[in-house]
Amino acid sequence: MEKLLGEFSFGLFIWQTAIVVALLLMLRKFAWKPILNTINEREAGIRSAMKSAEEARAEMQNLQADNERILKEARAERDGLLKEARELRQKMIDDAKGEAKVQAEQLIAQAKEAIENEKQVAITSLKNEVADLSLQIAETLTKEQLSSDKKQTELVQKLLKDVDLKA
Amino acid sequence: MKRALLVFFTLLLATHAFAVSNDKEPEKKGSLKDEIKAYIQHHLKDSHDFYLGSYKDGDKKKYVGYIGLPVILWDNGLVLFSSTKFKHGKAVVSKGSSHYKLYHGKIYKTDVAGTINYDDAHHAVNEKPLDLSMTKSVMTMLFTALLMFFLFRSLAQSYAKNGGVAAGIGRFFEPIILYVRDDIAIPNIGEKHHGRYMSFLLTVFFFIWFLNLLGLTPLGINVTGNIAVTFGLALLTFLLTNLTANKNYWAHIFWMPGVPIPMKILLMPIELLGVIIKPFSLLIRLYANMQAGHIVLMSLVGLMFIFNNWLGSSLSFLLAFAISLIELLVAALQAYIFTMLSALYFGFAVEEHHDEAH
Image (cartoon, rainbow over the protein chains, first blue to last red):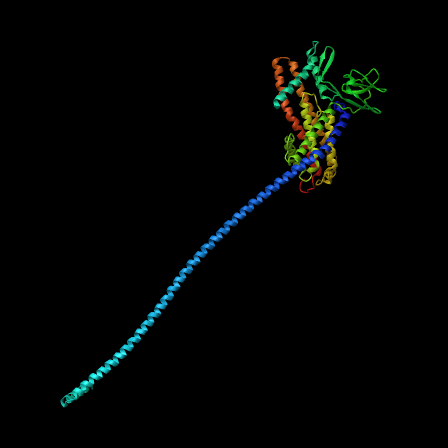
C-alpha cells in the first residue's frame, strides 16, 4: 500500500483528469452527440419505414380480401340473376302453357256448345221437317184411305182394336 | 495482418529487453535477473522522458530515439525546462536559487551538488516540488485524446456528408458505439436515463481501450497500469454517480427501505462504505490487470535472455506471444468491464423507486 501511494503521482492525476474531462466535453459536442443523434434518427427512420411497409402489406391484404369478397359477391349476384332469369323463363312458359290450356278449353267448350246448339237446331228443324212430312204423308194417306167406305170401316175397326188393347 | 504486427511488436519488445542484457562486462546470472527486474520496474513507472531503447556502450548508457519532455514544476512559482537537462538523472538543474535532481523517476529539490538525503529505509527525504510535468503518460494521453477527437469527429462528419451512413475509418467504430449503447448503457441504466451518461461511457471506454492497446506496442507505455490514471478515471465515475443520484439512491444508503429499524442503522455504514468501495474496486481492477499484464509479458521476454538457449528461449518466446494475444483480449475486456461497472453504478444512481423489489 505504501508502495502504491509512493507511486501515486499527483501531477499525472491532475493531467489525466484534465485531459479526460476536456476530451469528454469536446467529444460530447463534436462527436458523441451528432453520432448518437444520427444513429437514433436512422433507427427511427428504419423503424417507421418498417412500420409503413407493414401497414402497406396489411392494406394490400385488405384490398386483396376486398377484391375477393367483391368478386365472390359479383359471382353470387350473377348466379342469383341467372337463377332468377331461369325461374322467370320457366314461370313464363308455365304461365303461357296454363293460359293456352285454359283458352283451348274455353274454345273447346264454346265449340262444344255451338255444336250442341247447332245439333239442337238441326234436330228441331229435322223434327219439324219430319212432322211436316209425316203430316203430308198422313194427309195423303188419309185422303187415299178415306176415299172408300170399306177402307174407312177397316180403319175404324183397327183403331178400336188398338184402343181396346190399351185399356 | 494483426498477427504479423504482433510478431513484429514482440520482436521489437525483445530487442528492447536485449538492449538491457547487452552488457560488455561479464556478469553473474543473478545480476542479469536483477537488471531485468529493475528494467521492468522502470518500465512500469511513468517517466520524464521518452526513448525507444537503451544499451550500454562501455560505461555509458546510450539511448535510441530519445526525446526530452517538458518539465513543469510549481515551486513558489512556475518552473519550466526540458527533461533533457537532467541528463538521465546525472545532472542537477538550477533555476534561480532552486536546484532540482531526477532520482528514481522523481524530481527532488537538492543543493547545488545534487545531494540526496536518505532515511533509514534508504528512501529519499529531500523536499519534492509539485510536479506537473508533461510526462510520457501525459503525452500518451494527449496523443490518445487527439486521436480519439479526430477519429470520432470524422465519424460524426461522415454522417453529415454521407447522408447518415458512416464512411471511412469511423465505420469500424460505429458498431462498437452501438454496442456500448445497446449492451452496456441501456441494460444497466435503462432506456430513460442512459442518454445522460453516454458521453462519459463512450469516452471512457475508448480512452481505456486505446491506452491499453498502446501499452501493447513496444513503445514502453504503461498508462492504464498507473494508479494515478485509474484513480482519476474512477474518481470521475464516483463523482458522476453521486452527483446525478436521485432520492431513491440516497434512501437506499442512509435509510434502507423495507427492513427493520435496527437493520437500517446497521446497513447505513455498510452502504456508505459501498459508495467508496465501488469506484475503488474499479481503479484497483484496471490498475492491477494492466500492471500484471505488463509484468508477465516483460518477464517472459526477460526469460528468453535468462534461459539463453534455443529451447528455453523459444519456449519463452512462444509463451510471450500467447500472452500478447491474451493481453490483446484483456485490453478490450478491461475497458469493457470499467465501462460496464460504471454504467451499473449509474444505473443504481438513477434507479426509479419501486415497491415490490426488495
